[in-house]
Image (cartoon, rainbow, N blue to C red; front, side, top):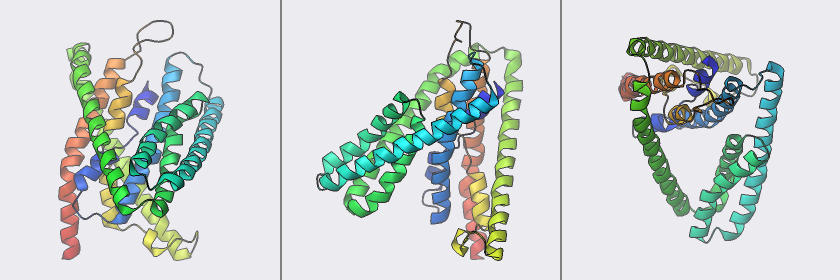
Length: 305
């Protein structure tokens, strides 16, 4: 159950971070890192969640078998995503003058890719991520600027609606979860949530600043073709560290926990896991989310001085 909770809370919310920092003048590099992190992080979190839930629901968990299956799932998802992006690129080059058809294909293809990947028992999430990266590569060459803006606006609306839907579902389920938790456990669970929030933030900061140090060291030694543009300064490192809010993905997979095990018994500590997940999301969105704009402006002021 600890692994289940860890998998749920491992996914960061780039949508929240980008929404909060919009218009604050973040560098292109920082935005790229935050968005790119979300793609890989969400996918790996969902795959880890799948294994953790399978272990809890009665499937025997052997570490080397799980590791091998993890690699197969990822590699298979990568392959399906590559193939589907090639097919989509082939179609787009011939119909890109028809805007409605182009946008329709771009909206439908991620769902088709996901279903095909899951049908052959590989990671649908990884397949869709690779498809998205493939679309971004050929869209610069094929699509006119107006079409790209039109497509982006449609996806922004879809993301907004899906975000709203998840919070509505949480709002509907949370009172039920709250009622099924002993009142004596409420404060300890809030305490656990606070500890998880602080520890996750400290680990993230340590990892980001370690990467900053490693990049600087590699650049000075001339290794790995590290360019000066790839280096992280203190300001960007701190912003990236502080942008690790939990949000929509954590909420979605928390409420997706099965209600029963394979033998019909109740899923252990399901209500506790959902409660802690929701509280951690609230702590990060309120704590880090509300202070992130202040931090960005403060660092910008110091740079100006």
